Image (cartoon, rainbow, N blue to C red; front, side):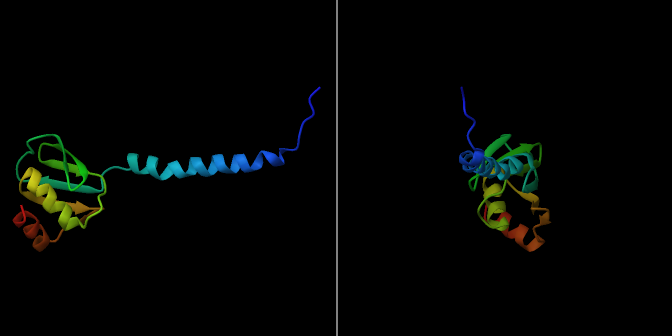
Length: 109
């Protein structure tokens, strides 16, 4: 016959499982959270998907979106301009690039 043991030896395993599962939540939330960068180009990009400054940009017509990168928004904008052409507007986390920074973004391309 089986003797039921105390659940005390199982509790650390449950803790590890819960901690491991919660570690995956930020990745899943970020993947479904949408774009960090949004840009409007002067003309449609040559390709629908490409990499610029280490992030994958997806463009439909003149509208482009990408996940968060590691550089400042102005640097990300200039990377996009080099790959896709003139950028008419650029936002990072909902904050638009100032006109002066946008001019520098396009000038770097």
